[in-house]
Amino acid sequence: MAEESGRGDHAFPQAQREGLYRAIHERRDVRAQFLPDPIPPEVLARLLEAAHHAPSVGFMQPWDFLVIDSLAVRERVHGIFQRENAKAAEHYSGDRGETYRRLKLEGILESPINLCITCDRARGGEHVLGRNSIVETDLFSTCLAVQNLWLAARAEGIGVGWVSILDQDELAEVLGLPEQVYPLAYLCLGYVSEFLEQPELARSGWRQRLPLAELVHGSGWGEPLADEALHEALAEVARS
Ligand SMILES: Cc1cc2c(cc1C)N(C[C@H](O)[C@H](O)[C@H](O)COP(=O)(O)O)c1[nH]c(=O)[nH]c(=O)c1N2
Image 1 (cartoon, rainbow, N blue to C red):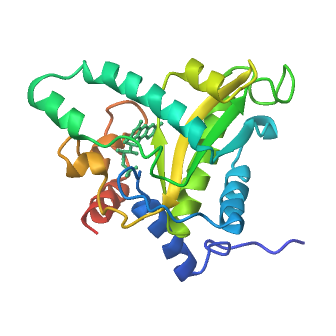
Image 2: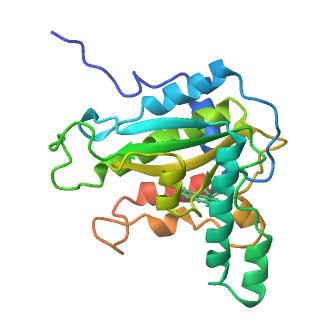
Image 3: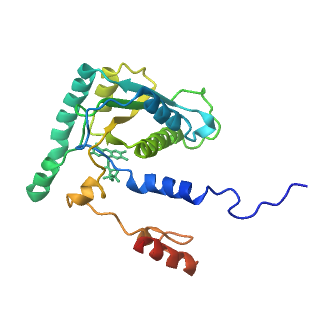
């Protein structure tokens, strides 16, 4: 008879747990702090391996990774960013507009490597297990690959910045993507002079982190938590 396993039997040792939470809390979106130092191939390989171990619907693994070191390609992508960012800036006026224009929102040319993580929407055939009802689950899966890479990069001391102020069709054309392949994430990667303690957008006064306790509901939207102890625990983690 199998032995009954107790709670915590499969937990990582304390130091490893702390390492994981540290990566989660100290991961930052990096735009302004990139150093030009190259990322050693074995380190980049580890990051890609981490991304490739993300969960995916029906084990579809819809991702591909374009490692973009070509300056010519990066300059074209930077041009797309500049055009799209000028359009985005039109949405803000007055002080907000000035703050927006001051924000550094990409590190396409300063970072040594750009990485595009794509989602092949046709991988695995027409019927992928688990994707029958929610067709976007391939995109969700690819986002998880991005997050795995982002956290692993933080642990390696490498900054990652996600640039989404891009026209996806133009980007797909620059990168020569097949019709069914969607350029899900355009990332800038590199060693950094520092990791900011807070998100850049919080630091610049653009937007602050919302209180977690206000985002946790009971069994229905807006219902209070039935579990008073969880309520207390949320207040406690917010204080720590
Ligand atoms: C899908 C997606 C897309 C973007 C981003 C993130 C994500 C998840 N973020 C980064 C975003 O601003 C940042 O994550 C938040 O401000 C929180 O900061 P930290 O990531 O905790 O440093 C981002 N940042 C930026 O400067 N330019 C951009 O185009 C984008 N685009």
